Image (cartoon, rainbow, N blue to C red; front, side, top):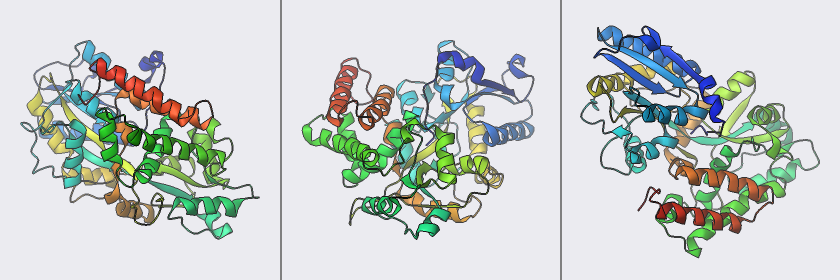
Length: 429
Protein backbone atom coordinates (compact mmCIF):
# COMPACT_ATOMS: atom_id res chain seq x y z
CA UNK A 1 0.00 0.00 0.00
CA UNK A 2 1.33 3.63 -0.47
CA UNK A 3 1.75 5.43 2.91
CA UNK A 4 0.30 8.81 3.74
CA UNK A 5 2.47 11.57 5.29
CA UNK A 6 1.03 14.34 7.45
CA UNK A 7 1.15 17.72 5.69
CA UNK A 8 -0.09 21.15 6.57
CA UNK A 9 -3.66 21.81 5.53
CA UNK A 10 -2.36 24.92 3.82
CA UNK A 11 -0.71 22.69 1.24
CA UNK A 12 -4.07 21.34 0.15
CA UNK A 13 -4.96 23.98 -2.39
CA UNK A 14 -1.43 23.91 -3.81
CA UNK A 15 -1.55 20.14 -4.24
CA UNK A 16 -4.94 19.79 -5.89
CA UNK A 17 -4.97 19.26 -9.62
CA UNK A 18 -8.11 19.76 -11.65
CA UNK A 19 -8.39 17.70 -14.81
CA UNK A 20 -11.54 17.78 -16.90
CA UNK A 21 -12.70 15.71 -19.78
CA UNK A 22 -14.97 18.46 -21.05
CA UNK A 23 -15.08 22.15 -20.13
CA UNK A 24 -13.31 21.99 -16.78
CA UNK A 25 -14.82 22.96 -13.46
CA UNK A 26 -17.24 25.30 -15.19
CA UNK A 27 -18.59 22.51 -17.39
CA UNK A 28 -22.23 21.67 -17.73
CA UNK A 29 -23.84 20.12 -14.64
CA UNK A 30 -26.47 18.26 -16.65
CA UNK A 31 -27.90 14.84 -15.85
CA UNK A 32 -25.02 13.04 -17.57
CA UNK A 33 -22.12 14.92 -15.98
CA UNK A 34 -20.18 12.87 -13.40
CA UNK A 35 -17.53 13.99 -10.94
CA UNK A 36 -14.75 11.50 -10.14
CA UNK A 37 -12.41 12.05 -7.19
CA UNK A 38 -9.00 10.35 -7.31
CA UNK A 39 -5.52 10.42 -5.81
CA UNK A 40 -3.97 9.11 -9.03
CA UNK A 41 -1.00 11.01 -10.40
CA UNK A 42 1.39 10.56 -13.32
CA UNK A 43 0.82 7.64 -15.68
CA UNK A 44 -2.09 6.29 -13.64
CA UNK A 45 -3.90 9.62 -13.91
CA UNK A 46 -3.18 9.88 -17.63
CA UNK A 47 -4.56 6.40 -18.17
CA UNK A 48 -7.66 7.16 -16.09
CA UNK A 49 -8.27 10.27 -18.17
CA UNK A 50 -7.94 8.25 -21.38
CA UNK A 51 -10.50 5.76 -20.09
CA UNK A 52 -13.02 8.43 -19.07
CA UNK A 53 -12.74 9.82 -22.57
CA UNK A 54 -13.18 6.36 -24.10
CA UNK A 55 -16.22 5.76 -21.89
CA UNK A 56 -17.72 9.07 -22.98
CA UNK A 57 -17.21 8.15 -26.63
CA UNK A 58 -19.08 4.90 -26.06
CA UNK A 59 -21.83 6.73 -24.16
CA UNK A 60 -22.73 9.95 -26.02
CA UNK A 61 -23.94 12.69 -23.70
CA UNK A 62 -21.97 11.40 -20.71
CA UNK A 63 -19.03 13.46 -19.47
CA UNK A 64 -16.73 12.68 -16.55
CA UNK A 65 -14.81 15.40 -14.75
CA UNK A 66 -11.76 14.26 -12.78
CA UNK A 67 -10.71 16.01 -9.58
CA UNK A 68 -7.29 14.80 -8.46
CA UNK A 69 -5.37 15.50 -5.26
CA UNK A 70 -2.04 13.96 -4.30
CA UNK A 71 -2.26 11.09 -1.84
CA UNK A 72 -0.77 13.20 0.95
CA UNK A 73 -3.80 15.50 1.01
CA UNK A 74 -6.54 13.43 -0.63
CA UNK A 75 -8.35 12.50 2.59
CA UNK A 76 -8.67 16.16 3.59
CA UNK A 77 -9.53 17.15 0.02
CA UNK A 78 -12.32 14.59 -0.22
CA UNK A 79 -13.77 15.21 3.25
CA UNK A 80 -13.78 18.96 2.58
CA UNK A 81 -15.85 18.32 -0.55
CA UNK A 82 -18.20 16.10 1.45
CA UNK A 83 -18.64 18.77 4.13
CA UNK A 84 -19.26 21.39 1.46
CA UNK A 85 -21.96 19.38 -0.26
CA UNK A 86 -20.04 19.19 -3.55
CA UNK A 87 -21.15 16.83 -6.29
CA UNK A 88 -19.30 13.52 -6.03
CA UNK A 89 -20.20 10.44 -8.05
CA UNK A 90 -17.19 8.11 -8.24
CA UNK A 91 -14.42 7.94 -5.62
CA UNK A 92 -11.11 6.14 -6.13
CA UNK A 93 -10.20 5.23 -2.57
CA UNK A 94 -6.78 4.34 -1.21
CA UNK A 95 -7.33 1.22 0.88
CA UNK A 96 -5.95 3.03 3.94
CA UNK A 97 -9.14 5.12 3.99
CA UNK A 98 -11.66 2.54 2.78
CA UNK A 99 -12.80 1.20 6.16
CA UNK A 100 -13.06 4.74 7.52
CA UNK A 101 -15.15 5.89 4.54
CA UNK A 102 -17.50 2.90 4.79
CA UNK A 103 -17.95 3.34 8.54
CA UNK A 104 -18.47 7.09 8.10
CA UNK A 105 -21.29 6.51 5.61
CA UNK A 106 -19.55 8.17 2.66
CA UNK A 107 -20.04 5.23 0.31
CA UNK A 108 -23.00 3.19 -0.89
CA UNK A 109 -23.17 -0.47 -1.95
CA UNK A 110 -22.18 -0.88 -5.58
CA UNK A 111 -23.96 -4.19 -6.25
CA UNK A 112 -27.10 -2.60 -7.75
CA UNK A 113 -25.04 -0.73 -10.31
CA UNK A 114 -21.97 -2.84 -11.22
CA UNK A 115 -21.87 -5.88 -13.50
CA UNK A 116 -19.50 -8.24 -11.70
CA UNK A 117 -19.47 -10.73 -14.57
CA UNK A 118 -18.00 -8.08 -16.87
CA UNK A 119 -15.45 -7.10 -14.22
CA UNK A 120 -14.35 -10.38 -12.60
CA UNK A 121 -11.86 -10.43 -9.71
CA UNK A 122 -10.10 -13.25 -7.89
CA UNK A 123 -11.67 -14.57 -4.68
CA UNK A 124 -8.91 -13.06 -2.53
CA UNK A 125 -9.96 -9.57 -3.65
CA UNK A 126 -13.57 -10.02 -2.55
CA UNK A 127 -12.55 -11.65 0.71
CA UNK A 128 -10.38 -8.64 1.52
CA UNK A 129 -13.07 -6.16 0.44
CA UNK A 130 -15.49 -7.80 2.86
CA UNK A 131 -12.90 -7.77 5.65
CA UNK A 132 -12.14 -4.08 5.15
CA UNK A 133 -15.76 -2.97 4.86
CA UNK A 134 -16.89 -5.18 7.78
CA UNK A 135 -20.09 -5.74 5.85
CA UNK A 136 -21.88 -8.30 3.70
CA UNK A 137 -22.51 -5.47 1.23
CA UNK A 138 -19.94 -4.68 -1.47
CA UNK A 139 -18.82 -1.06 -1.16
CA UNK A 140 -15.95 -0.97 -3.64
CA UNK A 141 -14.53 -2.50 -6.78
CA UNK A 142 -10.88 -3.51 -6.18
CA UNK A 143 -8.66 -3.19 -9.23
CA UNK A 144 -5.16 -4.08 -8.01
CA UNK A 145 -3.14 -5.70 -5.24
CA UNK A 146 -0.20 -4.21 -3.39
CA UNK A 147 2.27 -6.67 -1.92
CA UNK A 148 5.76 -6.19 -0.56
CA UNK A 149 9.20 -7.80 -0.53
CA UNK A 150 12.84 -7.19 0.22
CA UNK A 151 14.54 -5.39 -2.66
CA UNK A 152 18.25 -6.13 -2.90
CA UNK A 153 21.26 -4.74 -4.71
CA UNK A 154 22.53 -7.55 -6.93
CA UNK A 155 26.03 -6.09 -7.21
CA UNK A 156 26.45 -5.99 -3.42
CA UNK A 157 25.23 -9.56 -3.02
CA UNK A 158 27.64 -10.75 -5.73
CA UNK A 159 30.62 -8.77 -4.42
CA UNK A 160 30.30 -10.16 -0.88
CA UNK A 161 29.00 -13.61 -1.82
CA UNK A 162 25.75 -13.11 0.08
CA UNK A 163 22.94 -15.66 -0.04
CA UNK A 164 19.28 -14.65 -0.18
CA UNK A 165 18.14 -14.62 3.47
CA UNK A 166 15.18 -16.76 4.44
CA UNK A 167 14.99 -15.95 8.17
CA UNK A 168 15.77 -12.89 10.27
CA UNK A 169 18.75 -14.83 11.63
CA UNK A 170 20.02 -14.87 8.05
CA UNK A 171 19.59 -11.09 7.92
CA UNK A 172 21.71 -10.73 11.06
CA UNK A 173 24.28 -13.00 9.39
CA UNK A 174 24.43 -10.58 6.46
CA UNK A 175 25.04 -7.78 8.94
CA UNK A 176 27.94 -9.78 10.33
CA UNK A 177 29.32 -10.53 6.85
CA UNK A 178 29.33 -6.81 6.03
CA UNK A 179 30.92 -5.73 9.30
CA UNK A 180 34.03 -3.63 8.73
CA UNK A 181 32.93 -2.55 5.26
CA UNK A 182 31.16 0.63 4.20
CA UNK A 183 28.02 -1.37 3.37
CA UNK A 184 25.10 -2.04 5.75
CA UNK A 185 22.44 -4.69 5.57
CA UNK A 186 19.26 -2.60 5.44
CA UNK A 187 18.08 0.96 4.86
CA UNK A 188 14.72 2.71 4.84
CA UNK A 189 13.35 6.25 4.94
CA UNK A 190 13.25 6.54 8.71
CA UNK A 191 12.67 10.29 8.71
CA UNK A 192 9.22 9.61 7.25
CA UNK A 193 7.32 7.88 10.08
CA UNK A 194 4.53 6.53 7.87
CA UNK A 195 6.94 3.77 6.77
CA UNK A 196 7.24 2.50 10.36
CA UNK A 197 3.95 0.56 10.57
CA UNK A 198 4.78 -1.05 7.23
CA UNK A 199 7.91 -2.60 8.76
CA UNK A 200 6.01 -3.33 11.98
CA UNK A 201 3.57 -5.48 9.96
CA UNK A 202 6.04 -8.07 8.69
CA UNK A 203 7.63 -8.49 12.12
CA UNK A 204 4.27 -8.68 13.91
CA UNK A 205 3.03 -11.45 11.62
CA UNK A 206 6.10 -13.50 12.58
CA UNK A 207 6.06 -12.75 16.30
CA UNK A 208 2.38 -13.76 16.46
CA UNK A 209 3.17 -17.06 14.72
CA UNK A 210 1.32 -16.08 11.55
CA UNK A 211 -1.75 -15.12 13.62
CA UNK A 212 -1.39 -11.39 13.17
CA UNK A 213 -4.91 -10.60 11.92
CA UNK A 214 -6.51 -12.75 14.62
CA UNK A 215 -4.49 -11.04 17.37
CA UNK A 216 -5.09 -7.60 15.92
CA UNK A 217 -8.87 -8.17 15.65
CA UNK A 218 -8.92 -9.06 19.34
CA UNK A 219 -6.93 -5.91 20.11
CA UNK A 220 -9.21 -3.67 18.05
CA UNK A 221 -12.23 -5.29 19.70
CA UNK A 222 -11.00 -4.16 23.11
CA UNK A 223 -8.90 -7.09 24.33
CA UNK A 224 -6.05 -5.25 26.06
CA UNK A 225 -4.94 -8.24 28.11
CA UNK A 226 -1.21 -8.63 28.85
CA UNK A 227 -1.09 -11.65 26.52
CA UNK A 228 -2.31 -9.58 23.56
CA UNK A 229 -0.32 -6.44 24.34
CA UNK A 230 2.91 -8.42 24.67
CA UNK A 231 2.86 -9.26 20.96
CA UNK A 232 2.91 -5.55 20.14
CA UNK A 233 5.57 -4.78 22.74
CA UNK A 234 7.81 -7.56 21.42
CA UNK A 235 7.39 -6.37 17.84
CA UNK A 236 8.22 -2.77 18.71
CA UNK A 237 11.29 -3.93 20.59
CA UNK A 238 12.47 -6.18 17.75
CA UNK A 239 12.11 -3.28 15.31
CA UNK A 240 14.14 -1.06 17.61
CA UNK A 241 16.79 -3.77 18.04
CA UNK A 242 17.34 -3.86 14.29
CA UNK A 243 18.51 -0.27 14.61
CA UNK A 244 20.48 -0.52 17.84
CA UNK A 245 22.24 -3.71 16.73
CA UNK A 246 23.38 -2.32 13.40
CA UNK A 247 21.12 -4.13 10.94
CA UNK A 248 19.88 -0.80 9.60
CA UNK A 249 22.49 1.64 8.37
CA UNK A 250 23.49 4.33 10.86
CA UNK A 251 21.56 7.52 10.15
CA UNK A 252 18.58 5.83 8.52
CA UNK A 253 16.29 7.69 10.94
CA UNK A 254 17.35 10.96 9.30
CA UNK A 255 16.75 9.85 5.72
CA UNK A 256 13.83 10.74 3.48
CA UNK A 257 12.83 8.40 0.67
CA UNK A 258 15.09 9.84 -2.07
CA UNK A 259 18.08 9.69 0.29
CA UNK A 260 17.34 6.10 1.31
CA UNK A 261 16.93 5.08 -2.34
CA UNK A 262 20.34 6.63 -3.04
CA UNK A 263 21.90 4.54 -0.28
CA UNK A 264 20.54 1.33 -1.81
CA UNK A 265 21.36 2.11 -5.42
CA UNK A 266 24.88 3.37 -4.63
CA UNK A 267 25.72 0.14 -2.81
CA UNK A 268 25.92 1.52 0.73
CA UNK A 269 23.11 -0.83 1.79
CA UNK A 270 22.31 -4.30 0.54
CA UNK A 271 18.54 -4.41 1.08
CA UNK A 272 15.40 -2.25 1.33
CA UNK A 273 11.95 -3.48 2.40
CA UNK A 274 9.25 -1.92 0.24
CA UNK A 275 6.01 -2.42 -1.66
CA UNK A 276 5.27 -3.20 -5.28
CA UNK A 277 5.13 0.53 -6.13
CA UNK A 278 8.84 0.84 -5.29
CA UNK A 279 9.59 -0.50 -8.77
CA UNK A 280 8.40 2.85 -10.13
CA UNK A 281 10.51 4.80 -7.63
CA UNK A 282 13.59 2.90 -8.77
CA UNK A 283 12.74 3.29 -12.46
CA UNK A 284 12.50 7.05 -12.02
CA UNK A 285 15.54 7.59 -9.81
CA UNK A 286 17.96 4.91 -11.04
CA UNK A 287 16.72 3.36 -14.31
CA UNK A 288 19.89 1.28 -14.77
CA UNK A 289 19.96 -0.10 -11.23
CA UNK A 290 20.26 -3.91 -11.15
CA UNK A 291 18.08 -5.32 -8.38
CA UNK A 292 15.96 -8.28 -7.43
CA UNK A 293 13.30 -9.05 -4.82
CA UNK A 294 12.72 -11.93 -2.42
CA UNK A 295 10.06 -12.83 0.21
CA UNK A 296 10.15 -11.17 3.61
CA UNK A 297 12.09 -13.19 6.24
CA UNK A 298 10.51 -15.57 8.72
CA UNK A 299 11.39 -16.10 12.38
CA UNK A 300 11.94 -19.82 12.26
CA UNK A 301 10.92 -23.12 10.75
CA UNK A 302 7.24 -23.76 10.36
CA UNK A 303 6.36 -20.09 9.87
CA UNK A 304 5.22 -18.74 6.53
CA UNK A 305 6.67 -15.62 4.96
CA UNK A 306 3.84 -13.09 5.11
CA UNK A 307 4.42 -9.89 3.16
CA UNK A 308 2.19 -7.00 4.13
CA UNK A 309 -0.16 -5.65 1.50
CA UNK A 310 -3.74 -5.79 0.31
CA UNK A 311 -6.10 -4.79 -2.41
CA UNK A 312 -4.89 -1.28 -3.07
CA UNK A 313 -7.19 0.67 -5.36
CA UNK A 314 -10.95 0.74 -4.79
CA UNK A 315 -13.47 2.38 -7.08
CA UNK A 316 -16.57 3.36 -5.12
CA UNK A 317 -19.87 5.19 -5.54
CA UNK A 318 -20.51 8.16 -3.27
CA UNK A 319 -23.53 7.83 -1.00
CA UNK A 320 -25.23 10.91 -2.50
CA UNK A 321 -24.05 10.39 -6.09
CA UNK A 322 -26.30 12.16 -8.60
CA UNK A 323 -25.76 9.44 -11.18
CA UNK A 324 -25.09 6.11 -9.42
CA UNK A 325 -26.21 4.05 -12.42
CA UNK A 326 -23.73 5.72 -14.77
CA UNK A 327 -21.07 5.62 -12.04
CA UNK A 328 -21.55 1.87 -11.76
CA UNK A 329 -21.35 1.46 -15.52
CA UNK A 330 -18.06 3.37 -15.62
CA UNK A 331 -16.62 1.29 -12.78
CA UNK A 332 -17.61 -1.89 -14.64
CA UNK A 333 -15.93 -0.55 -17.78
CA UNK A 334 -12.72 0.52 -16.03
CA UNK A 335 -12.39 -2.71 -14.02
CA UNK A 336 -12.93 -4.98 -17.04
CA UNK A 337 -10.12 -7.32 -18.12
CA UNK A 338 -9.67 -5.46 -21.41
CA UNK A 339 -9.11 -2.07 -19.81
CA UNK A 340 -6.99 -3.47 -16.99
CA UNK A 341 -4.70 -5.20 -19.50
CA UNK A 342 -4.28 -1.90 -21.34
CA UNK A 343 -3.18 -0.33 -18.07
CA UNK A 344 -0.58 -3.00 -17.44
CA UNK A 345 0.67 -2.79 -21.02
CA UNK A 346 1.15 0.96 -20.63
CA UNK A 347 2.78 0.45 -17.20
CA UNK A 348 0.19 2.78 -15.69
CA UNK A 349 -0.41 0.51 -12.67
CA UNK A 350 2.01 0.00 -9.77
CA UNK A 351 0.16 -2.93 -8.21
CA UNK A 352 -0.38 -6.55 -9.17
CA UNK A 353 -3.33 -7.95 -11.09
CA UNK A 354 -6.41 -9.36 -9.38
CA UNK A 355 -8.31 -9.51 -12.68
CA UNK A 356 -8.43 -12.86 -14.52
CA UNK A 357 -7.21 -12.25 -18.04
CA UNK A 358 -4.99 -9.27 -17.18
CA UNK A 359 -1.35 -9.39 -16.07
CA UNK A 360 1.71 -7.12 -15.76
CA UNK A 361 4.46 -7.32 -18.34
CA UNK A 362 6.66 -10.33 -17.59
CA UNK A 363 9.98 -9.37 -15.98
CA UNK A 364 12.05 -11.22 -13.37
CA UNK A 365 10.89 -8.83 -10.64
CA UNK A 366 7.22 -8.84 -11.73
CA UNK A 367 7.26 -12.62 -11.98
CA UNK A 368 8.75 -12.96 -8.49
CA UNK A 369 6.07 -10.65 -7.11
CA UNK A 370 3.52 -12.88 -8.80
CA UNK A 371 4.87 -15.80 -6.75
CA UNK A 372 4.94 -13.73 -3.55
CA UNK A 373 1.44 -12.26 -3.94
CA UNK A 374 -0.69 -15.22 -2.74
CA UNK A 375 0.88 -15.08 0.75
CA UNK A 376 0.14 -11.35 1.16
CA UNK A 377 -1.53 -10.44 4.47
CA UNK A 378 -3.44 -7.22 5.08
CA UNK A 379 -1.66 -4.08 6.25
CA UNK A 380 -2.58 -3.42 9.86
CA UNK A 381 -2.38 0.32 9.26
CA UNK A 382 -5.08 -0.02 6.60
CA UNK A 383 -7.57 -1.36 9.16
CA UNK A 384 -6.68 0.63 12.29
CA UNK A 385 -8.62 3.77 13.11
CA UNK A 386 -6.92 6.95 11.79
CA UNK A 387 -5.87 8.03 15.28
CA UNK A 388 -4.31 4.63 15.96
CA UNK A 389 -2.38 4.74 12.70
CA UNK A 390 -0.79 8.02 13.76
CA UNK A 391 -0.09 6.67 17.25
CA UNK A 392 1.77 3.66 15.83
CA UNK A 393 3.74 5.81 13.38
CA UNK A 394 4.94 8.04 16.18
CA UNK A 395 5.26 5.21 18.69
CA UNK A 396 7.61 3.17 16.50
CA UNK A 397 9.73 6.25 15.99
CA UNK A 398 9.97 7.05 19.69
CA UNK A 399 11.00 3.48 20.61
CA UNK A 400 13.64 3.41 17.87
CA UNK A 401 15.03 6.75 19.06
CA UNK A 402 15.02 5.62 22.69
CA UNK A 403 12.54 8.29 23.76
CA UNK A 404 10.02 5.79 25.19
CA UNK A 405 9.98 2.08 25.88
CA UNK A 406 7.85 -0.30 23.85
CA UNK A 407 5.67 -0.89 26.92
CA UNK A 408 5.12 2.85 27.42
CA UNK A 409 4.09 3.23 23.79
CA UNK A 410 1.55 0.44 24.05
CA UNK A 411 0.23 1.79 27.36
CA UNK A 412 -0.39 5.11 25.62
CA UNK A 413 -2.06 3.44 22.62
CA UNK A 414 -4.33 1.40 24.90
CA UNK A 415 -5.32 4.61 26.72
CA UNK A 416 -6.08 6.26 23.38
CA UNK A 417 -8.13 3.25 22.29
CA UNK A 418 -10.14 3.35 25.51
CA UNK A 419 -10.86 7.05 24.97
CA UNK A 420 -11.94 6.44 21.37
CA UNK A 421 -14.20 3.58 22.47
CA UNK A 422 -15.86 5.79 25.07
CA UNK A 423 -16.49 8.36 22.33
CA UNK A 424 -17.90 5.77 19.93
CA UNK A 425 -15.08 6.42 17.44
CA UNK A 426 -13.72 2.91 16.98
CA UNK A 427 -14.51 0.50 14.14
CA UNK A 428 -15.49 -2.26 16.57
CA UNK A 429 -18.16 -1.73 19.25
